[in-house]
Length: 163
Image (cartoon, rainbow, N blue to C red):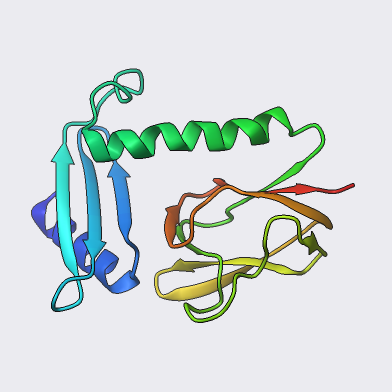
């Protein structure tokens, strides 16, 4: 990845409002974190050689180590319960939002009933806000992604009990 590509990615992330974006390619791993500073945004970049999946849990620094173990336990319950529950997955890559705007309440809380067509969340992709609607009815059992987090295509977002 060239320096110009990295600079464009930093600008995109800063404008999107996302707090953190991770990009892993064959030979490079980049993490961009933004935070509130005096002028609005501060960007941090960490560029490391890509590691094999087996080595990843043992090698990261303190902050990534806190994030890495959090992801697998969140997805394991969905895999264990998938005979009874339906997992709603992200149809696009973007930034996941549980609220229609920062000053509004979340679309759904755990335990709420969901009907076909109800808006579950918003995923922002390239400055377009896409409402993600439920394709099933049931009870929201679990939210698998934190608000304002980047999501990948086909990443599990919600677990719904259709019974």
